[in-house]
Image (cartoon, rainbow, N blue to C red; front, side):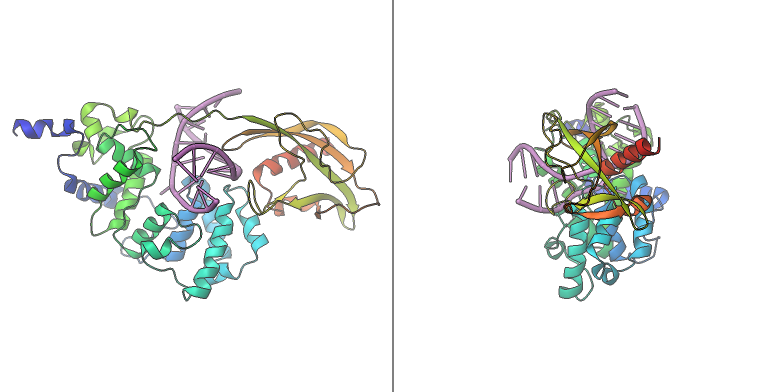
Length: 364
DNA sequence: AAGCCGTGGGA
DNA sequence: TTCCCAAGGCT
């Protein structure tokens, strides 16, 4: 080995980018995870299942997705089944998974696929990119994993692995163009789908955010960050703004229905936070507690010594809980839902929490 | 382009 | 407790 070879890792790049994919694919063939949406070796992938898994896994952990994926594919096993589904049922089936625009886009895309693509996904990245819910990542991932196209797949795992492999010290998100270019350099012509999944498995199990297991890494010999001892510090990230606090009121409005107690639910507007989801009525969410503003009806509201606190991505919400009994005059907007089967309403987590609190108070 | 958009788990 | 983060997309 001459001097040039020995300092190569210090030049902020793998000595030989073309050596990365073979080493990684060899590791993947021995350590790949067995996942419900993943084709077994030698099996043809099912594009519907690949697509659904990619959407469910956006910003969502494998542990959370696994049971939801199984339940979903039992209920809607194909594009055609999903395209024919009722929107309210689809939204309720997504309840608790978060980022609810994903569910709306999933259904919208299934219907476009049924009506304009003969019931099958297009194979190319560019064509996939035109469908609702397909951004740069998902289009590349589906093209590569479902159809074997050579696409450059970059998710948060790949960003981390590649930032370390090439010791890219520009903070995210400014580093994205450089990271994508570097990923392009190590993506193989063959098995691009396995390569992408291998990078993600590696990022999940070995090249982790904290305490990366560099001793177990099949790429350590090629890794610039490993050579310079800065694996755990990369990638750098721009600091995030601090999360503000907001306050609101939940109105737990009940009545005696034909088959037991019922509570008033509303449907949130299609766009915005928790868009299109069933919900408990709330007033505005503001920096100061808004009290009984925008109550669904005028009645004798009673404050409960309970509420719900919930962290969203960009603010924390504290909801006070008030209860009231519907009187005869004036029917409020919304739907009356049997309290005994509230679990079937498909409430987002913040409202499920509040409902539990309200029922606990009433039972106690 | 940067802010909006959920949730649950790990440290 | 609090903070960070995960197979991102949309505007």
